Length: 143
Image (cartoon, rainbow, N blue to C red; front, side):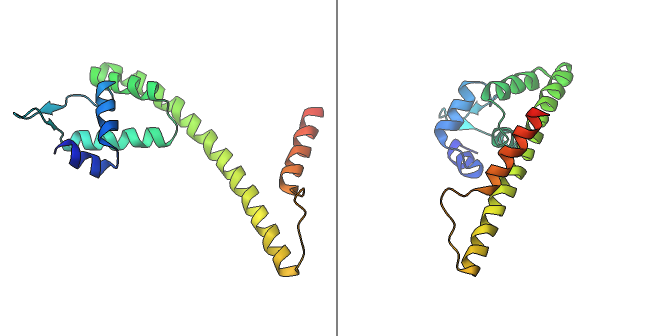
């Protein structure tokens, strides 16, 4: 497939794909007789994995490091494993943060729904979810 089709299938811009090739994130790109880039299904699958790494917050330099180790073959399996283990720890931290944020937003939604049902108003300065959280933090620090 050519770069235009790859762009559509990966939902990445042509410029992004060219940049990924330039920095070594995408490798072994062949060209046809007219000089056009030609990609295969393996590269499509690889880009799918790169998108997962990006979506989960892996820094570009670590993605490139992973890609370079991948190109070096089996002797880098341990290094790739360690890089992914470090990254999964980051993902787990993100999940905890997202769950906390989700709970706070959900609590705020319930506060608004109750206020609308009761015909009450909520002062702008009221944010009990954050106030409670801050009190708990200060209690933990003083303990």
